[in-house]
Every structure is written in structure tokens, then in C-alpha cells.
Image 1 (cartoon, rainbow, N blue to C red):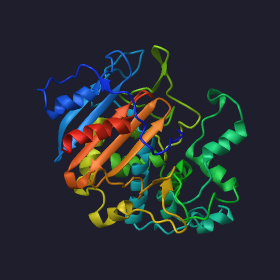
Image 2 (cartoon, rainbow, N blue to C red; image 1 turned 180 degrees about the vertical axis):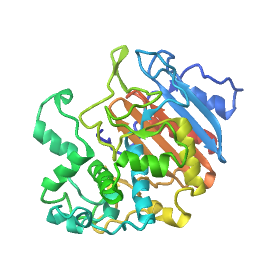
Image 3 (cartoon, rainbow, N blue to C red; image 1 turned 90 degrees about the horizontal axis):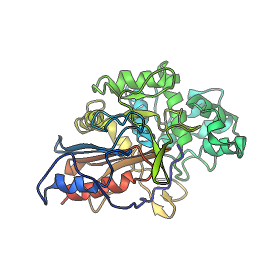
Length: 368
């Protein structure tokens, strides 16, 4: 589930006969036009616009997979990839709310057997990507060399934790720099398990999904649960598509293993707006941009603003909290503009679409 650089990947304009007919100039018609090139028989996308707490646009385009040809709709569950990180962060924040841990606890406080470098690596630094933990995918690449991905055993969050425990150092002193870390969020899933005494997926169910009535949302574990109304990932292959739904890193949960739908994400967005799970004061740390001690937070020469599971850069002067996910066969994005009371969500089950670009083009329509 290797995350690509933050820079928005521009794609060809999309256009397909919309499911909803609207008058020219109407925001719904303009939004539908962005997705109008997705053929009804191909993998596609689901898009949702929430304005002032109400769903004003919600449509699916294309099919969940090429075998069943089931149509994508608001109940279709997509692999979120890195959008999962906001749920992992919320799980940690709920444990802080419970008084079971603090953000400044170190890895060795949670895992006494952790190597010495864990004594200076805090939960806060892992949440905001300043931990410097080694990239587990890089470690896997060294271990397996040129072995085809489909012949590499899938790694779990526990497996990532084991790799971190075998390491003797970090990429840089914790807190000094910003570097996006999938390893960190896999470790956070294991922190949730250790502190709560529950499996990570069970904790998410009990404390987030069930209270918010996100009844079809889950952390997918092959052989242990099933994804209802599931969309499968796809990659272009000549004039068609091939299913590319799983990779050696698709079994980790904390950094990208949640599946959910537009219907359930509307419930999540409402909970964030209404502070259903945590008070406004308790959610504040998640929305406080990290300030590394040695150098400004940036990636590929671009400034980065990040909290706990959320990017925080403004957009054309509009306050924003956002994230995106990219994994084999899936592209996802959520763009929240709290002061504008606007949220745009785009979920794609094909690798040739830019969910970020589509979500921002949609936001442009409603921010006018």
C-alpha cells in the first residue's frame, strides 16, 4: 500500500452519463460531468458532497468488479487505503480520553521489550509522522529482493511491529523532521491492541463504527470477516482492466485496512462535525500542525501541514482537513472544509483516476 508523494496527480477529464439529470449550471450537473467518462461496464468511482450537514450529491459510476458487474452505489465498500489513518488516530485519541495512555508515552512505555531507540519515540510523534521509524516496505524489499509481489507473504501490523523491534535506529532523531510513515500507523494499531486488550478491528467496531451506526464498515482480515457490497481494485490493462485487489502489504490494518462506503462516511463526517466521539477540545490535538525541531515539515520541496491522521493545508483560502489513499487498484480522497460546512468524498476502484483531483474539482464547484 505504498503511499505516493503528496503532489496532486493530474488525470484526463472524466465524463459519463450521470445517474441524476440536472439543469445546465446546476452544481449537481457540473459534478456529474466530472465523472461522465466512466463507462457503465468498467470499474469506477463513488462521489459524495455534504453541505451544511445534508447530502446534496451522492452517486456511483461503473461496477464493483468485472465478474458480477454489480453497480457501484452509496452502499459499496471501498478499501480506504490511507484514509484509514484518521480512524487509527481516533482510536488512539479515544484511549487518551479513557485515561489509559498519553500522547507523550514512548514506545518502550507501551512495549517494554522495544529496542532502546523506542525510549525517545513518542505516540505523538508517530501520529504526526515525525517518528523516523524505518519504512517497512523498504525492509520487505531488502528481504525479498526481486521476488514477485504475489509470491511474498502478506505482512500484518504485528509483523511490522516485529520489523521495528529488530531495528536498532530510526531514519532521523524523533521529532526533528517530518516523513510520512505507514510503519508508524501499523505500530499504532498494535498500541491500540496492547493498551485496550482488544483486537484492533474489534476496538474500531466497539468504539467508532457501531456507536456511529457505520454498520458496514470494518477492518478487513481475510478469513476472519467479509466485506459486504465489496468493490475490488483494478488497474488498466490495454483496452481493459485487470483485478489488482491485494498485494503483500494489503493485510496491514492501521495504515490502510478499513473498508467503508459513502453512506457510512456521511455518518463519520457528521460525527466529526458534531464532536460525537470527542469534545472539540479533545479533537484539537489532531488539528494542530506539527512543528519539527530541525526543519520545516515538507515533502518533495512542498510545505506540509499535518496533525493526527489529517493533512491541514488550506485550499484557496479555505480552511481544510483532508487525506487521500493510494493502494493497489484503489484511489480515495476526503476533503473537509469545516468553516464552509462542506465535505467532498471520492472513492475509486481503479488505479487510473486521481481521487484528489476529482475531489478538489468537485469542491471548486461548491465553494463558489
